[in-house]
Length: 267
Image (cartoon, rainbow, N blue to C red; front, side, top):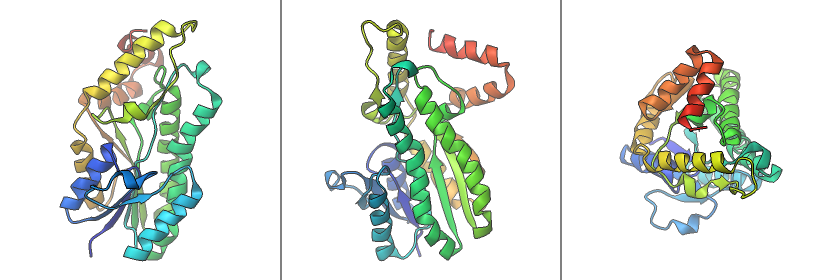
């Protein structure tokens, strides 16, 4: 039987690319969106789900289980970007970002675990970010929410070992998707002490996304992980220098690494 894969945030960007690729490999793929009716031409079914609303998570899982009787792979891909000076980002936006990037994935995991435990098998892949390995200027909240998901996966993974359920992280760098359009941008305020530096950094971030890698790289990486008998704890996918930045953080003195980041963002 074909493996059943559930991809949160599967209607666009990385999720869509992964889903379409997995369909060509014979997987039974279900994607999710808050508004599935907007994607009538999707190459795989799109089911209603908002990771910040528990009732939609339960309904989505139940709907898939009624059709397939199993879920072999969960790809926690749904996420949201956020930028701005931490001092100026409203608390409500900080909490909303963590609800989407951290609490949401945890709640989807909780919803599929009883089924995977009953199956005595399963794979959970959490899409984090290379930004989650470091505190980036004006992306601090995003870095923190993705970094939190990286760390909790390490703990979760050990707790699930006895049930034959694997869990892993995949941290992408910048990919050419529409994530910037859906990102919360704190406005560049005229009277803000951060006006010049934040405005410049915002332009740099958007340029990185626009010139990002082909999302098919992520699709191929996810496929290899699914086919792996013993998935690693962490994977990084993206441009060489973005992945190498994690290595540099590990080997360079903190102050030196901070200076490299500040020079990169022209701060």
